[in-house]
Every structure is written in C-alpha cells, then in structure tokens.
Image 1: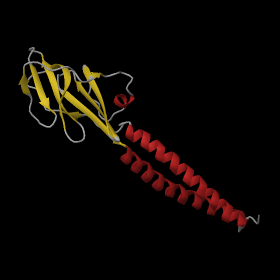
Image 2: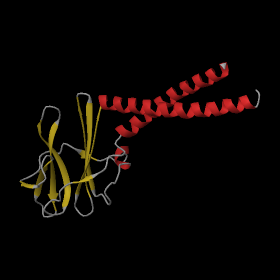
Image 3: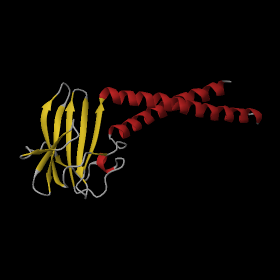
Image 4: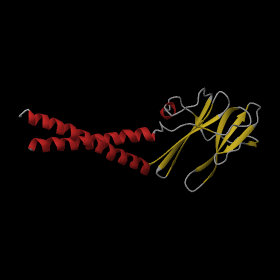
Length: 191
C-alpha cells in the first residue's frame, strides 16, 4: 500500500507542476494576441493609400483615437474609432502611431490576417494595470483593417489560474488512472 500512496503523491506533484507550466504557456500565447482576429473597418469613400492615427481625447481609462486615411485623390478622411462613417478632414494631425515592424511577433501570427498588406501602423498604450496594442493596415485594394489586443494584469492572473486548475485536474486524473493501471498490473504479477 505504501507504494500506491507514493505513486499517487508523485502523480499529484507532477500534476501541479504540469498545470503550472500549462497555465504560464496559455497566458503567454493569450497575452501576445495570437488568436485575435483582424477586423475590417468601414470602407473609406475611395481607396486609401496611407494611414495615420491621432489621439483626439481621453476618457476615464484610456485615450480616444481617430484613424486618418489619405485617399488616392489626395483628400484626407477621418474615422473616429467610436463611429462607423468616414468624414472629410483638411489634413491629418501628427501621427501617434509608428510603422509596423516586420518582426512584431503578435502581428505575424494573428488569426485571419488581411492578404496583400501595403501599409501598417502600430500603437502601444499603457494605463493602470493594462496595456493595449493596436495595428491598422491597408490591403492592396485600399481597404482598412484593425487589430487590437488588450491585456490586463488581473485578466492574465485569471487566465493562468483557470488554465492551472483545469489542466492540473486533467493531468491528475490521467496520471492517477495510469498509476492505478500500473499498480494493478504490478499486483497481479506478484511483485
């Protein structure tokens, strides 16, 4: 019986360890935004040739943004990110975003990336216990796409905890079943 208790305790220890590792891995994948899909924004009045992002205010928690697009005709239009209609503007303000880096891992592995990107801008923002990554891209047809990934410390803790508990229980169940089968075979063999 002592061998059975030792094996089950080893299974419990390995389950906790494997659950913790799984929780950390799931958190890293989730927080990088690998499974966040690109969203197509409303089409501008004509094909856009370049993008700029302007900070137009601030609410209680974060900045308010307006996306600006230069059209093939040379005109500029603006899309406040809280609205769904492009509006003509004289000229875009200073760009609050930077050009997307090709090595940005979150953009390389996102879900459903637009095909034939011709331009991309990126903005990173940090506030309280959260941070937000935003990317806006043009495809070869002049359509505008957006990718936003926000992660917060408390949310990450929840993801780690849930993944840790669920995967730990699964690992414990599987390892206990395997241990019981092994102990029964060992008992039948007379060892």
